[in-house]
Length: 378
Ligand SMILES: *Cc1c(COP(=O)(O)O)cnc(C)c1O
Image 1 (cartoon, helix red, strand yellow):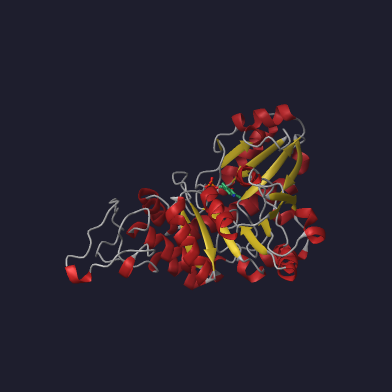
Image 2: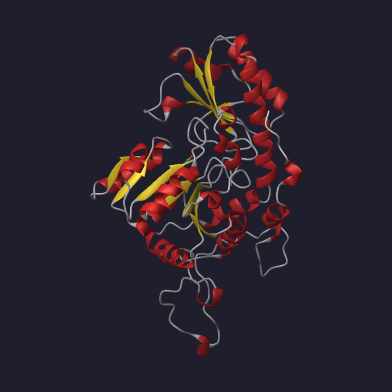
């Protein structure tokens, strides 16, 4: 079992979730601001054309450009991600924004979250070349985008970011890290050389299976300005209601995620140590079962709160979710409620024996008991 030093989680990080957003109202709970448009200054002498500035004098003009709920979310994300944060209407719209900004001719990517491959399919039509991440050492050259998803969907296993950032820096490429499966404080991709970080905020940042959103983080103010500019014309700012829901969710990010990781590490250890009791179980995959040294350095708390089960037959994998009481059978992950997915239903590249498990905040003994009884009766 990996140690879970919750006490040692950075105080500035947990405090930032609660106190780093600013507001001009005295409400403790953030007001839900829904307006799409905002009055100009009532003093005629202060009226100047907006031009390219989405928020002249920091004031909102029109909600596609920026608005108060979004500002508060971005202020918090900036602190906890350690870089300028730009919020989008989904993880994939964040990915589109990154591709629009870097405009690469060649992208290196592995299998992993299938939606990003769907996005790249659209760019391929315009001539962007897609290469397997395995080929990066041999083929990467200046201006290429290296896309590393870690931990990886659906296995929950970690990839060595230092290895990829070494190649990326030596060749003059850009390293994009999709860190969706390991939100802060589980992993800090900056330490290992990321140039830009992407999260689907629909997963852990939202955490309640009711928000679709995404975020990019950069440490370069020029890239931040460019992304903010592009977002106005992509039209993919996070919508106002979703920004408000995300703001509320972020307050509890650390306690949710640490509980989910602790639960996951315990469940994975239990299943591994009790393999003999479950003949239907062919394999378990999770970062805590990897032996490479980089994994502990990159993910000091263990995790992610997602792991993969492989059963001995497709039929068993099809039936297993129906035997569980506490795991919703659905796609997506990261909610406070546990979920399981017979993964081939939404990803046709995955073997029909694969189940992806996203662990929630329930009592861990209850989750272990549910999985055990389910595995025993298939
Ligand atoms: C869900 C997910 C995305 C896409 O995010 P959406 O918010 O669904 O658009 C991208 N990458 C990973 C790893 C994901 O899990």
